Length: 304
Ligand code: TXA
Ligand code: MG
Image (cartoon, rainbow, N blue to C red; front, side):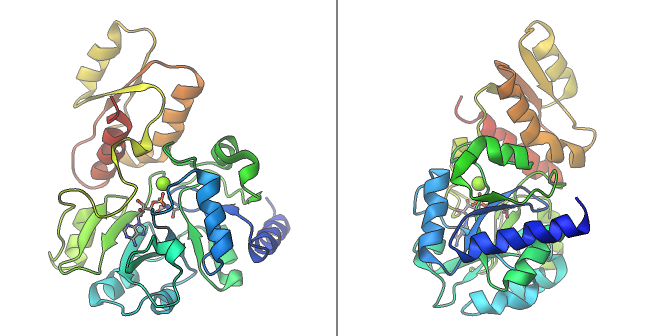
């Protein structure tokens, strides 16, 4: 797209948002289904478009870290530190919510999730919009998140008013979520900003996700494709498992975790499109970005 075409698309997206419509937005992680976070009726439409239960809170996306205080009742020091170090980037911070934040956005909780995405088109959109955009991933509830505009169109069809096409998402898995409303802060969802990075920034003051996660909507089969997903711990085990099953796909980029994450959801969707019965996925080692890939693969495998 030329600069002029991008400008026209953003103009159209702003018009749709201003009228209470829904716009699919590209981010560095996955596509979001965005509505004006201050428009109750618009945010409600997000839930019906996705088929998502109404008590699942949405992340508020803003243009810059300086806007965090507009959404938070107080900004805990850990949140200020992480925002400063990691935004724009694939990190969502849960903070005590400001009084004006709509109940439909937080699912009735006393916290709100805020994030500054790192994608040039969406940064320009958010800057020109000025406010916050409430956006979950732009998939139908229970499907894997979309990482291309084509995934969004295939999932949501006419339920989305406009799709801002920003190409394929470079990270490919959803943002890391850190709850900064508790002390010590707690990691609720692993992502491309790794637990090791967050822990180092907080000088070790980070609690791992423990027990039933406090982030709603993170139940077992949230990321499931139709195919059966079988998990193995090594490439050799993967090759052995697929050797005598012609309809099985081997999913393995364990030698390059950045590529593994980037292509994960597109690979899962491709397997479904081709009617693959079984996906044998090689789990990467549990460190760094490997945590996020393991988490999503385990969710994809969980209903079996
Ligand atoms: O990378 C991402 O985070 C993408 C892009 C579009 O920004 N968004 C995304 O949104 O993955 P969603 O709605 O699919 O996942 C957000 C998760 C959900 O599990 C939701 O329940 C949780 O964050 N969450 C959001 N606000 C919360 C809150 N106040 N308390 C607890 N959990 C919250
Ligand atoms: Mg989602």
